[in-house]
Image (cartoon, rainbow, N blue to C red; front, top):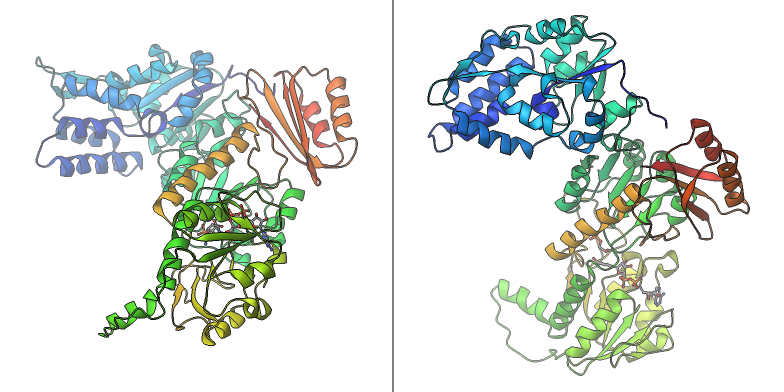
Length: 634
Ligand SMILES: NC(=O)c1ccc[n+]([C@@H]2O[C@H](COP(=O)([O-])OP(=O)(O)OC[C@H]3O[C@@H](n4cnc5c(N)ncnc54)[C@H](O)[C@@H]3O)[C@@H](O)[C@H]2O)c1
Ligand SMILES: O=C(O)[C@H](O)COP(=O)(O)O
C-alpha cells in the first residue's frame, strides 16, 4: 500500500560516497601504500584530486590520470579493498536491499570508479552486474595497475553523459549521487531529476544545483512513494542532545540514521522554543527546563529523554497531553550519589575541609577536637527511594544506625528503621541526608523551623534538588553552629554551563563542601545512562514500546512481524477504542494484534494490521475525535 513500483522509471546511482561511505580509489591508495613513508601525504594528494573532480573544479579525465599515477597498487590490494568496502556500504543502501533486488531491472550504477571493486560490492545488494558501468584498470603481467582502459567512455571528460546516452533508456531517469558529474547528467537533459545524496558527504556546490536533497536512500524512496525499510526516513528525524550527554548516546542515534545535534550546555526557554521547532527527540539532563511554552513550540516532538533520574524539570502533564513520551534513567547514577554521600559525611564529621584548607595555607593543626567516627552515629534520610535504600545498606555496613522518613510507606532494608514524621527524624539524627524527588510540593521543605528542630552540631547534606532547602536559613544555621558541617550538591539556581559564575550564600562558610551538581557525574554512571536512555527512546520510536516511560501508559510490545503497526495516542475519553474498531471493521482491516493501555490523561492503542489498507483508512483513523498523535511503523 501507499507505494508504487519503479517501472517505467530508471534510477542511476553513483558508487563512491553514495553507494558506499568512502571513495574507493582513495582507500585503494591507503591500502597499497601501507608502510610507505609518504603514505599520508600521497593519500592526501589523491583525496584532493578526488574532491576537485567531484566539485567540478578539475577536468575529470585529468584528475583520474593523476590519481592513478600516484597509486602503487596491484590486484592483491584490490582484493583487500573489496573486503574493506563491504564494511563501508552506506547504511541506507544496506537497509533497502530488498528494494534494490526487487527493482534490479531499473537500477544502474554509473561510476567513474572501477568495476574491479564496484561489481563485487553492488551485486551483493542485488544490482545486476550488466547494469554496472565504470572504468577498468590496465594491469601489467605482475598484476600491477599501470593505467586506465582509455577506450571506456567513462575515462574521458563528460564520460557519464556519453555513457548514459548510449544506454538509450526510455522513461524517466532519476540520478542519485554526491558529485558534480552526477548533476551533469541532469544538466545535459538526459536525466529528469538529480538527487544530491548527503548521507556521507555534503558538497555545497552539488547540493546547490540539485533538484532534491536526499539524506539517505530512505528519503529518496519516501519522496517517491517507493517501498522502503523505514516508514518515515530517520535521516529526517532530528535528535537534539543537550547538556553534554555521553558520546554513546550520539553514536546510538547516528548509527540508527537519525540527524543528531549535540550541545555541551543547556538552553534557556527562549532559545529552546526556537531550537525545538523541528526536533522529534530531545535529550536533556537536570538543567534544561521543558516548560509548557517549550512544549507548545515543539510540534514535531515525539519523545523526551531525561539523561538523569529527576524529571521535575519537565512539565510532564503538558507533555502527556501533547502525546510526548518521557523516559529517564532511574537507576544508572544511584550508586554514584550514594558513594559521594558516604565520602562527604566522613569528611564532614572529621572536620577535614577546614583542616585541609589550613594546610594549603601552611597551617598545621593536629587535634582530635570536633572530629568523630561515623560508626554508631544516627543517619536520618528524608526520602527512601532508590538512592535512600542504597545509602541505607552502605551506611549500615559502616556501622551507622539508619533511620528514614518517606511520604510513602516503604519497606525498611536491613536494620533501618522508619520514623513516623519528618520532625521526629530531624530531632534524632546526627547526620541528615535528603533524597527526596524534586516535585513542586517539596519546595523549601527544609527551612528555619526544620533546622531549629535538628540536634546542635548536626551534619546536613543535600544531594537531591536545590529548591528543597531554604539556603538563607541554612547559611544562618551554619553560622550559628547548629550545623557543624554541610555538603550541598544541588542549588536553587545553578549555572547553565561551566562558563557561568556560581553564586550562593553558602560560599566561604566553614566545613561546607560545595559540589557543582556532580552526584551522578561519574564516568560509569554517564556511560550507563548514555546507553540506557537512547535504548528506551529507540524502542519507543522503532517499536512503540513505552516500558519505563515516566508519563505514558507502559506497554512492552512484541517485535513487529510481517505487518504494519498503527500507534494511536488519544485523550482518555470514553468511546475512542469503539470508534477505531468501527473504522477497522468498515475497511475490513485484518488485525493481527491489538493492545490498549490508559492512564488518567491519555489512552495508547497499538494495532498490528496486514499491509493492505488504503490512504482513506489512515485519514479516517487520524480524524477520530480525541486523537492526539498518530503514526505508522513498518
Ligand atoms: N545530585 C545528583 O547528581 C543527583 C543524582 C541523582 C538523583 N538526584 C536526585 O535525587 C532524587 C532521588 O532519587 P531516587 O532515585 O532515590 O528517587 P526515588 O523516586 O526512587 O525516591 C524518592 C523518594 O522520596 C520520597 N519523597 C518524596 N517527597 C518526599 C517528602 N516530602 N518527604 C519524604 N519523602 C519524600 C518518595 O516517596 C520516594 O520514595 C532524584 O529525584 C533527583 O532529584 C540527584
Ligand atoms: O536527577 C539526576 O539524576 C541528577 O540530578 C543528575 O543530574 P545531571 O545529569 O544533570 O547531573
